[in-house]
Image 1 (cartoon, helix red, strand yellow):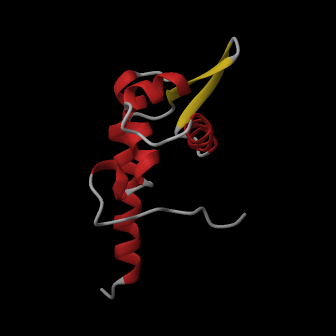
Image 2: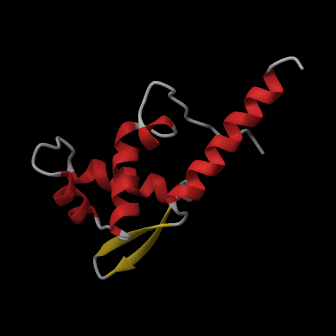
Length: 107
């Protein structure tokens, strides 16, 4: 089994430190709303968002593949719900960063 990828941008803010900015916006929406469809995500992002329906659909699907969202079919659409709460997600990521720092600096 290969290494899992880990995203870390110390210059970003909020959850975007641990995932891309669009992923972070969509995860924050999912955590806030408790469930989300692609159409709802586009509505909540607003008209100023330049994201296409297919882009949002792809990103939500990838977040589900990563285990951050659960994906269930509801008629012709999918509903995405958080698979992990935000506090636990942040705890896990911070734990990984701390482990990396401990393992890479001399004692």
